[in-house]
Image 1 (tube, rainbow, N blue to C red):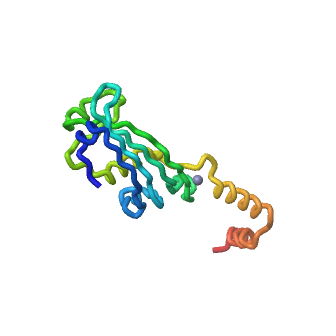
Image 2 (cartoon, rainbow, N blue to C red; image 1 turned 135 degrees about the vertical axis):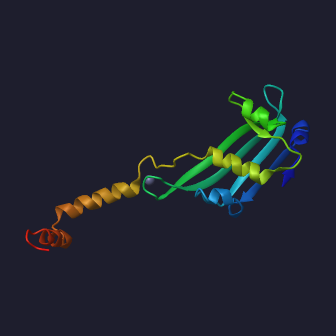
Image 3 (cartoon, rainbow, N blue to C red; image 1 turned 45 degrees about the vertical axis):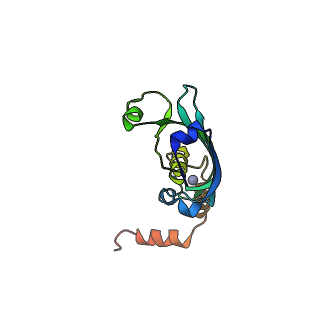
Length: 163
Ligand SMILES: [Zn+2]
């Protein structure tokens, strides 16, 4: 799917669709899995009167918690307004909060959507409370209370004089 950025903005174009998760290979590397991402791209002008694209995304993303390494579900629902810039210098030289993207005659919508999904994900995904760690702690506590066969083995091994 390809759009001519500036023309799409000028004509107030609208594009609605879905991208299969299997196509989102850069996301897979994060790792982030999803069945699909639904998107809506609307062309127009932003508050400054510059040509822009408004990108709305919805998807159920599955990330990996960086604390307990268990799956972490992240419901994605974002809307971003991107000003279309005519050159990279304008994007790099800007020091405001406006998100910009390079306007091109052939802008790949899948790439645009994947870029915006990546930007919308948490930098370091973490559960508010890692359930698996809570369960592990409880199990550890139980094991310590009981005299486990492993505990006995360990104390045998630690007997002075033994090798
Ligand atoms: Zn976790």
